[in-house]
Amino acid sequence: MSTLGSFIWSIADQLRGPYRPNQYGTVILPFTILRRLDCTLEPDRATVRALAAKYDNPNRLKVEVTRATGRPFYNTSNYSFINLLADADGLADNLADYVDRFSADVDVFEYFDFKKEIRALEKAGLLREVVKAFGAVDLHPDVVSNSDMGDAFEYIIRKFNEAANETSGDHYTPRDAIKLLVDLLFAEKDVDLTGAGIVRTLYDPTAGTGGMLSLAEEHLLAQNPDVRLSLFGQEYNPQSYAICKSDLLAKGHDATNIAFGNTLTDDAFKGRGFDYGLSNPPYGVDWKQYAKAITKEREEAGPYGRFAPGLPATSDGQMLFLLHLVHKMRAPEDGGGRVGIVMNGSPLFNGGAGSGPSNIRQWLLENDLVEAIVALPTNMFFNTGIATYIWILDNTKHPDRKGLVQLVDGTSFWTKMRKNLGSKGREISDVDRAQVVRLYADFTDADPDHSKVLSNDEFGYWTVTVERPLLDEAGNPVVDRKGKPKPDSKKRDTENVPFTYGGSTVGAAGKVEVIKAYFDTEVEPHVPGAWIDWTKTKVGYEIPFTRHFYRYVPPRPLAEIDADLEKQVAKILDLLREVEG
Image (cartoon, rainbow, N blue to C red; front, side):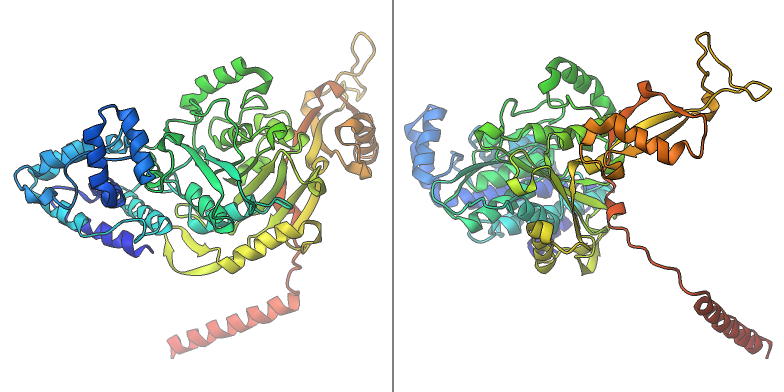
């Protein structure tokens, strides 16, 4: 639990009465952001005011402020939390002036309708107490690290959503899950990120409050304090966007790299590729309302568009984010890109041969983009206990991994939490995380109980339509004008034939030979007279993760079960005798 977060949330107690609990966040979140920025700017306030008096042009002023302070954003107001309370009658106007005088890139307060909240607090007679309470909390980055500030924001959002009875899964991902994703993303073999002059770009299309971007940055800076990392993100939830942007502003990043809007309908970084990408998109979220725009884009963009490989069912948009993230990888000829995404189990297997999801998997695997898939423990997320998986994709795989996919079963690597947070009762400790990353790094030498390495072809299959003859009343086949037997649609069946059936190693190229061998061995002996309708044959791909790690557990011996039953019967009889007595 975030101690700072709970302290800040306790300020909300002063709002009781005029505000309902589900409205607390609309005050607490923007004030926390304002105080964080206020503390960050405080040491250079006099310098900035002097520069503002000298330069009227905002572009020139930004250049001079950045040169003098090292930060691209600023505030030219004469007010701050230090002197706001000095003028009791003018507090609301002065606070509004303070918010107005941030540089143009600090647009975050608009997304909270903050000025309206200032007036509402003044009307309720609460503004002075709230400003006083926040003024007493030092949120300077030297006092409160970015990681601790992120934890505090996440705690506040969770409390806000609990009060509003909303799901928090759309807004942020548990830090232990992010840390594992980040470790796997940067665990690439033979890639040295410790040298001098390294510049990297990192992108999150579902940025939320910025937790993934912040932790990835911390990871890289821990490896190499001199690395230059540019962070990019897009977020469609106004409050999450505001938090993400303000957090990165406070760290000195270019805030214009964080865009507001829906990634699926309006890619803010069109035509741009990144070194690294990471995302935890919402699970099972309906995209019907965007279907028209997305389908139109797919048709107009042609074979190289981001959604060209296929579209999933409109009931679940996860695979749209998967395709988008792959599309944003830097091109192989420019050094390549690598991405990590957290999804539930449905993208592994949903949709039969020829469906959108199957076609997406086919495109990813035939282009050798999937490097590893790691199963996470259940009960890892705040709003769901379902099974989740990290996918690692790379368009310039290490030679050892070309043509192969590693499946890692990390479901048993978890530590029980002392207290549940929503559905989250388990966490991945540092030790757990190191074990999973070691399994990934060991690759073909990893413990086979927890890791399997398979060729891309092992996920492919053909769905074959098997026909049987239509029989007349005498039991004879009915034939068409050419003398060929007519199929009986009621007896029509399909068979899934693996690319690798019979030990075949030629993949889709072995279509006729493999399907015929399967039919001759598995079908014809049991259904004489049947035939294959080759015109209906479809290619499919699925990743049956759990099947590869299935372990047969024999049932208990009958004698053991009988003995247990006899013990229970004896107990019941004893209890009945006591009642009768």
